[in-house]
Amino acid sequence: MDMNDINNLKKELDIKIHALFKDNQAYLDYLLQTKKNFLYRYLETSTDKDIKIVSSNDKTLLAQSYESNMGDAFKIADAEIKEGIKNLAKSVPREQKPQVQYSLKTTLEDLRGDNGKIVIESKINWGFPEFNDSKGNFKKKQVVFEYHDPNVFRKELALKYEEACELFN
Image 1 (tube, rainbow, N blue to C red):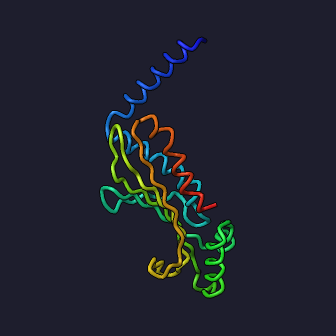
Image 2 (cartoon, rainbow, N blue to C red):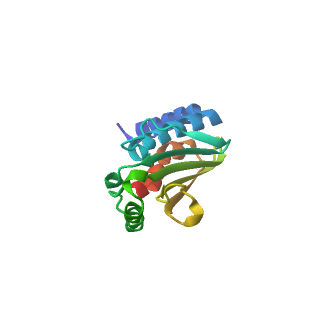
Image 3 (cartoon, rainbow, N blue to C red):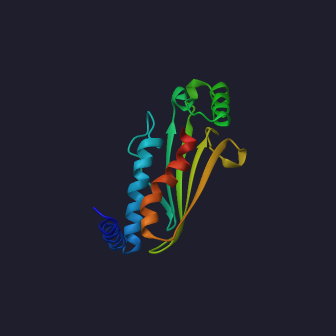
């Protein structure tokens, strides 16, 4: 295969991808499928399986889960989160069934054909039982993804979710 053949194959693939992502629904479908894969990998817990994505408005897609097994929650590598979970486990009696909340939020600031902007936010909240952000018992990571081509969207969306989900490691 010479360089001409390779360039022709690249052009054909580019045309197919542009045809596949012909409208906003195609982008949204791809985004939802990608997000579901990350929910399975990072948000499923010992008690929460088959997590659903809820939409609070046309632009926000949120998924949450709860970990009641403090041993599993304590496996998070981040020192700040680990300390928060340790304090939760010390301060809340086991009978009250303390939990840690995990969430993955996607904000569609602009989702359309040739360009767009998506904000992906992962969060771990150890502020049991009300999980009130104003108390500061959480840590989040936000990744902004701007794309200007369907190829970039298709290739990089999962990488951006992976970057945001590093918080759960």
